[in-house]
Every structure is written in C-alpha cells, then in structure tokens.
Image (cartoon, rainbow, N blue to C red; front, side, top):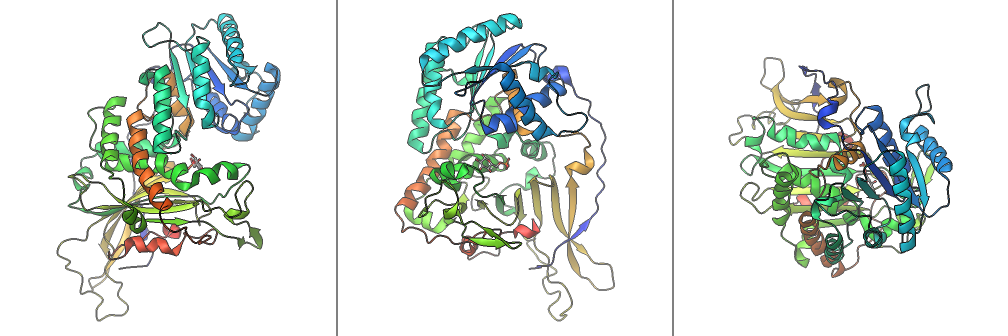
Length: 533
Ligand code: BG6
C-alpha cells in the first residue's frame, strides 16, 4: 500500500452556466412573523439573525414580515435592535457595507420579554403579535423558532397552544415550529417528546432542524449521486470496500459549552443527528422525488437497517475517547476534565469511532466507519468511499525487485469534502512517464470555491427559507428521529454495561485515541489520517 501523498492533478471543470438568483421560484412569498424563543442566546446572534439578514439582502424574504425576539431579559425594541446590529457586524464584518440601523431586517426586529414557563407571558405575546401584525399588514402566518434548551420545548408548545397561538392545519393562515436539537437524549425521551409535540401540532407543522442538512455540500451528496450516471452504479457491495465518515473539530469546550456537553457526549451531540444524516444520504436509495416525503422515506429505510447492537457488538464496534491535558505552541491546553462545567471525573466521550453495517441488498458486507471528536488535529468533515481493488491486479509484482519503485497504489477513493475546502476528489492510479511501468496515485480534484464564484448560502439561511416556504425536505421526521435513537440507544446501553473507559486517552490536536485503529483489524484498511484528508 502506498503511503506517499498522492500527486494532485489540476482538473479543469467547465462551468456551463452562471446562476442568476431565481428569486421568484424559491423566495418566500407569504408575509409572515418569525418568533424566536431564546432571542438573547448565542444561536440567534451567531446564526439566525445573520441568516435572516442575508436572506433579505439576497431578496428571498417576503415583501412584508416581522421578527419578534422572546427571552427573559427585559429589553426594549431599540435595545434588541442595537444588540442584534452589533451581532450582525461581528458576524458579517464591520467594513463599508456593514449592516446599519436602516437595514430592513433591523427595522423589522421587535422584542417581547417573557418567561416561557408562565402562560400569562404567552397571552401578552399574543396581544403583541396581533399589534405588530396589524401595524405591518401581516396576515398572521407564524414561524416559531425554539432556540432554547430542550427541557423547554414541551412547555413552550403547551403555552403557545393554550394561548391560541397555534393555528390548525388547514386554516387560512399557518403556524409552523422549528425545533432545535437535541431532539431527546435517549430513545424514550425522543419518543415522549414526539408524542407531546404531535399532540399539539400536525407533523406537517413541525420542522426538526439538523443544520448539517442545510449545508450546500451535504445537499450536493444527492445531486452528485443521482444527477450523474457514472458513480451510482458503483455504489454497492460489489464495488465498495468500505466508507469512512469523519467529522473532526479542533474546538474544545469553549465558553459555557462544557456543562451541556458533559451531559451529551459526542454520540448524542454529533453522531445521533449529523453523522447519521450523512450516512443516510450516502447510503440511501434514489428517492421517488425531491419532495419531503420521498427523501425522508428513503432515509428512514437506511436507519431501520441499523440493527441495534448487543453488548458484545458494542464492545467490538465502538471506541470512545476523551482528550487529556496538552500543550500547543508553548500554550497549555486544558484536558476535557479541566474544562469549565465538566465533572473532573467525567466519563463522557469527546470522541467516538464506530463501525456499523447497513443490512440491505445494496450494502451487505460493506463496513461503514464513523468518527467524530473535539480537539482533533484538524477541522474537517468528509465522506470517503473506498472502492475495492481490481479483481486481477496486473501490477502487484511491480516494485518487488526495485527498491525505488513505488508500491502498488491504494484502491480508488472518492472523497466528498463537506468542510472546509468544500469539493470532491477522486484518486486513481496512473502510469508514471518513463520507460518502465510504474504506477502512482493521483487525484482529480474539484473545489467549489474555484468553480463557483458566488457566496454559498449558510445552512441556517437555507433552512429558515425552506421553513417559511413550507418545504420540510431538509428537516427530520418523527420516525427518522426515533429510528436513529433506537440504534444509538443500543450503544449507550452497551456502554453502561461495560467496564468504564480509561480516560483521558488522547492528546489534544491529534487524530484521537490509537485504539480506534482496532476497528480495521483483519482488513487492509485504515483510518485516513487527518493530516491527509
Ligand atoms: C453542533 C454541535 O450541532 O454542531 C457542536 O452541538 C458542533 O458541538 C457543531 O461543534 C458543528 O457544526 P459545524 O457546522 O461547525 O460543523
């Protein structure tokens, strides 16, 4: 197997068409009020308000709309506007074309202080919404965004409903609710939450958000697979050796994250949602169409094939990790257990690697390897599809009697890079120029940033726009959530019955615990090193 870095070949990608924004086809047409619970929180400042700003700037918001922030802090509309303006400038830049107080999104901001546990707050909210909607000529379509801790989801929905703030399906004006993750912390709690939520809302009104699905490169997985004829015929057990899905982060527990994270761990925070969604998209069958139902039906079929693991299988197929204290560039790096909000004896995983199988006709016998972790060597998300070696390896003898000859190249690898350096690469063997027959592995690379000049929409822009348009295809359905929990729950149950892990077991800014290599034991494969991805 060659360990040298493959040479990169420049591949020219022709752009045949320059997009002009097709506003009318995809813009949100119906005037609406967007109500954000948790408006003073981090998500609103870093993602939601900037996303609405960008949607307005690109012409995707309806002609008339209002944004109403709700949280406990007492603030006037003007205070809220100036806080959000500051947040916009922090996120989008402070240069000559920086957001100003005159921007329509800033003018559309309103604020209502309220305690989400107090039904009276919702009565006042209703009055306030009616006043704002009257002033701005809005019909009463409402998109509620629950950007709050999950414990508050049920009480907010109950109080919204009790105050008459939720319109039933079929009424002239609509109510929709976006629910942030995590949707439950176990199979049981996810089922209980689904029962509560669906007792108040029709499934068509519920938008369970997973921001990975809003990423351009994640959406491109389906376009790539089903918009081309040359790759899809190879995506099966006949040609694929294995698939590796990596979501690595260099971040640790910045800010106040530690307290939340210590109750979740990587399995709940990343694998149950984002990574299983990536798995679904790379493994699913072609949907009957691009509408929500077709896509969700196929994703759920993949999740149902993930057979819950026994304790023995959990021990064999999963590896947990937790970063210890380290040093980088002369600076001391806290270990996970030293992070603010984390129990000093915590056994919560900040890294997880797992091997799973998809029990269906297409993928029988093909292992899927997933790994994700904090404080790894590199921030990278990618899906690497490794193909099998050709059945007759004509070149296997090359290099046997020539110590300078490179060894036989690895099999073809197709990499879908989700972030950063968004793009796709395909490695293949090529004859080195010269009189001898020598093979070398080279890459065909496509970089989004080089080919497409326009700014890709941020995940939250896309998802907010879709929710306003009533398109739920990039949101998760109740059965998807429950099927993914069923599998994840079996791993948590297995861990609970196994001896506690010996933590910490990896040094910060590395590839994670060495033990993860054992998932490849008995195969020719190995994890892609983060430095090479
Ligand atoms: C969030 C997790 O859902 O996704 C975080 O809670 C994680 O822990 C984040 O850092 C990663 O998102 P992205 O878009 O930066 O890859």
